[in-house]
Each structure stands twice: as structure tokens, then as C-alpha cells.
Length: 622
Image 1 (cartoon, rainbow, N blue to C red):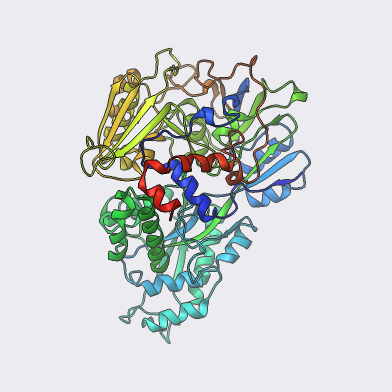
Image 2: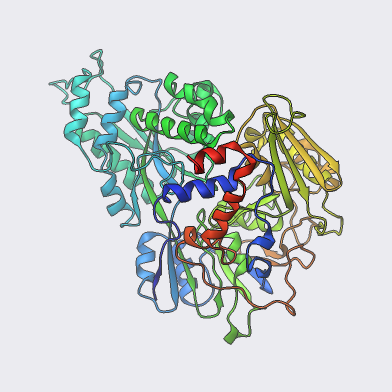
């Protein structure tokens, strides 16, 4: 047994970061990388006869199922203690993937005494993040200060002249002393700068041992600062409801994950405008210096300006501490190596990912590459098959998304490739005078060989309907990224146009990643019925488009999928050989995760685009 090297080791070198960021997010009228440009991509599956997800709710039982050859893959992250035990087992492959996310504390900055920057910074200095990574995560995480994960090209992590990694009680107490948080001789606890006693309530969202352990370490930090603090674990929805609606709280331990490298969420999470908007800006944070960078972050089409804004906003947030990021942990994956190969390590989810189910195949000695049943696990029973209401259930939601297609798809490394779309163009008024000033226009050309599982063709009308549906349905989980979309219209059967009433680098991804749904089905469901739609396949018919179809479901036991023979990407078992089974250890030096593609190809794509837009000339010819 060997432990596979992480796919992402820290942040990419600056030059590579810019190459990949520009390839995936450029506002220029040229298509994304074509599938034909990625060697080996056309031979990428699915290869399985069946994909079987066994419902196993307890982590130790998942491990026993893996060891006893009842499953081939643990379908969610593995606990560090279990991960270390599995390291001794022969025939089990372990993979560590730096998580695109972190654990953090959100602080109610409009409430005394948390409205004092010195108080929040004192706590940040007092918490021993290094001990959290060593003790709580057993070495499977690292300290983090920035609210943008270290692996993200936009992250400022490691670039600041100070850090909060190790506990510095001396500096924390000094900050409090200088701000008149004096120690009361009778109680031994500090009072606020007005001389009033106070107590801090630390809450943990979730009842796991990890939540308890970290909560206790935060209390220890407060003890070192001579601050009266207590820990409570509230019910999940009561706490979340208070955060969502800007209700009363002091400090809450939370968890945050991302599915891509976008950082436009910095505005919605921290801009003053959203300090009283439900669902946004949990810390109720307001800062004029930060607000001054928001327009550049959201509405500039110049990569330099967006990058600078993201960095400056992080500098402000890391100093002001409306949130205290504690750690970036590893996603720990475990799978068997006796029958299957081709497992793919995704930067967002680790080994249990869409690409693993698409690429995994039987070894030649097992009669492969085609055939076989890949057995994975999911930690919760299926509550429904409506992917729009399963957003919080990550393992299940990821599997449901195998039944749908999006316009673009990120590779395991986060690089955009065409999927349901063959190409796209993003333009502003400076590129095309027909685009109104201040607007962004996105046009997609849809592939012509895609069909719904009931045989109807997938058209531009389905695409425009889908995005309008997501924007207009009540309490839509997709609405926040579509609020300023002013038009979604099918120009022809296979060309669709979207228009936004602002200029922004981020509009492309607000459309391109969303699953496309069949218009002829959801017209009958209607806008009001989106959250009540809950088919129970295979007994109930469900019209989908992705590379897998649900073939069976036994509640509390197993969920099964088979390849969709009508999918545009389906591989014939007669004409296609096996793909390269092992992803390279460093994707930034040679892979899109779908097949081998050299850095030279990626660089050539960028260099070829230099003549199309002045921002490329400024960056690469400076």
C-alpha cells in the first residue's frame, strides 16, 4: 500500500495560476478548450455495467465494508483516525486531497464587544491553529488564515507579514489591554471598554466530536485571555436560522466548501450592503475600505483588477477578523485496488467524484476495461431524487448530478471544458457595439447529438428555459447568482444567448455549471412546484440526460445506476480501448484529469489568444 501524493500541494506558482485562471474565465469571444483538444478525452467512459451506492450510515461500518470487499470505494471522506488504520492494509489505496474549503468561526460584529477589531484579533492570536491541525485532525490539515482556501489562485494565504497559526496569548492580551478590556479583580474576567461585564457564547453547528473538540479549544483560548466564555451545541436548524436571518448570536463554529475557484462570493459574504440581507454576510460585517473594492471584484472585466480586488479584500478580512478561519483539512479517500483502476482525484471532492464514476474500469486481468459493478457507499439514506432540494447532501447530490448535464464541466483540476455546449463567447460593449454599455452577453452553441432519456432532443430552448426557471422559482437555491440576468433566450434550436445588466468575469460560471432540465417536463411542474417534485425512480419515470440512469432503489439499502446508452458521450465497448488509468501526481504540470495534456498545450491556448484581447498583451508582454 502506498499513499498517493495530493493533487494540489499548496497554491500554484503565480505564472501557472494566471494561465489556468485565464483559460477558464476569460471574457473574450473564443471557445473553451474543445474535447478534441484533450488527448484521450474521447475514450473516457463510462465503462461500468452498473454503479451501486450502498447506504451505510456509520463510518466504521463503511470501513468494515471496504475491508471485507463489500464495497470498492468509501463514497465520502474518511476520518483521520480511520485513515491511519487503513494505512496498514494491503490492497487499499489512500489519497489525501487539500480541501477547497475550511472550518471557521463567524463573529457577530455588530454586537458589543465583538464590534471591536482588537477583540476579534486577540481571539485569532490566542487560538492554537497548529494544535487543532495536529490534535483534532491528527495531522491531516494545516492552519489557515485567509477566507480563500490556499489552493485557490486568488488566495492571499502565506503572503501577509503576520499569521495567526500558533497561539500568541501575550500579543492577544496586549491588544485587549491597549483597548481597555480590563480585568476585574473580583471575577478575574475582563470587562468591555465601558467597564461592563460580559460573557461569550460559543456555539457549534453540528454535534460531532470534532465540533465539540474545536469548541473546547476556543474556550481554552478565551481562558488564556481572561474572558468568560461558555460552549453550547444548539439544534442545527435553530442556529442556522439565526445566522441566515441575522438573529442574535455571539460566535459560531461553521464549515465552508467550494466547488470551483470563483471568489465573487467575497462580496456577498462581507459587503456592507448585505449585512442585513437574509442568507448573506453572517458576521453582519461593514467596512468602507472593503466596500471600495467590491465594484472591481464583481464588475470589472480586467483580470488584473479582479485579482487585485480579491487580494486587497482578503487583507482587510484577515486583519479585521469578522471570521476566523481555523484550518484547511485534507479530504481523505480510500478505495480497493484489486479489481478496478482509473480512479480520479477531484480537487473539490477527492476520489468519490463524478469523474471517478465516469472513468473507473475493470482491470484487464478482470476482463476489462468494460463491465463490472463498482460498489461505493453513501452515508445517508435517500430522502428524494430532486437534486434542487438535495443541495446540502453532498454525497447524494453529487451522484444525482450524474444524471444531468451542464453547459461546461470543470475537470478534476478545475479547468473548464465544453460539455453540453460546443463553444461559447462572452462579450461586452467594448467587444461588440450591439451589447449595451455596462452589460455582459454570453452566447453558447449547443451540441446537436444530445438527447433526453425519453428520446426528445436537448435544444437551446431547454437551456434558456432552465436558467429562467432557476431564477424565477420561489426560494430558489440558484437565484443569488442570477439576480442580475436580464435575458435568457434561444436564438436558434442550438444557440442560446444570456445577458446580464452588469459587466463581470463571473457571469459565465453562474450559467455554465447549472444542470440543464427538460422544458417539456418542468413546464407541467411549474415554478411553484419545483420543491414538491420528488419522483421515486425506477418506479416513477424521470427524464434526465447524463451519462448514468437510475436502475434501482431499495430504501435504506442500495441505490443503483446504469450507463445511459443514449448519452452523447457514451462509449461503445467494441470500438474503444481503455484510458490511461492513473492520474498524474501534479495536475498543474500535465493533466486535465481526463487524459494527458501538457502544460505546453495549456500555455499555447493562452498565447494563441493574446491577439484577441488587450488584457493578455498587458499580462504576458509586460
